[in-house]
Image 1 (cartoon, rainbow, N blue to C red):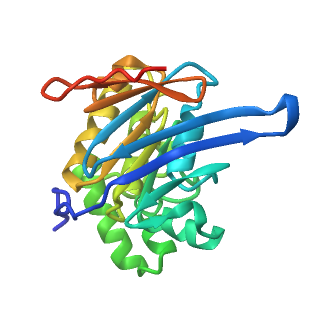
Image 2 (cartoon, rainbow, N blue to C red; image 1 turned 90 degrees about the vertical axis):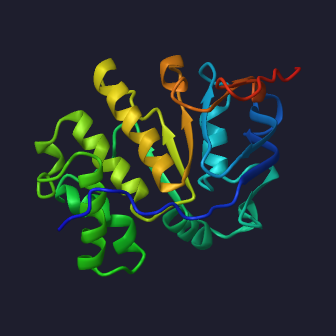
Length: 248
């Protein structure tokens, strides 16, 4: 029988960024996307990163996730500065320790939902049978039992994003990174998907880092970090924690 509950949460370390800068180009036309950002994401914490276009929020997410190497500064994960790793090791890290949810879902159209969700495990060497069994469990947990064999074109936008969430969580990642995960959805569907994402990440023990321009999305998170001109401009903690404004 396919399980309908998430796996028990594993123990994870904090993700710690210190003094991150990122400069694109050289000379007077250089763009300083990040100008010295330090940020700690605690195990199991959900953090929304907000700010206007060009504030550096997506660049910060990409540096935290090891997709982009900062010009200077460090990103520590489980005692290792991932900015010093080669591309092969960073690719393995992203596959094994991190999960990703993007605005468009980025599902493979030729694969059924269960295989889309199982991809991180299969790419990591897990047998197809074992990987699809784990993926089917997550699909059931996210309300998609019976839809395992549907391809992305046969799913609604909200259902496709649930498959993307299952794919992000199937490998028991320490951190899930989400870049505008509800941007392509209508408001009602977006709220539903976001509730599923935050609840599922919490139940798995994963931290969640969401880049968004939507204050409604940020309200689902335990902490909101606002950015301006490549710097952290302020932080808001959900009720029950503390608020801290960072001086510019």
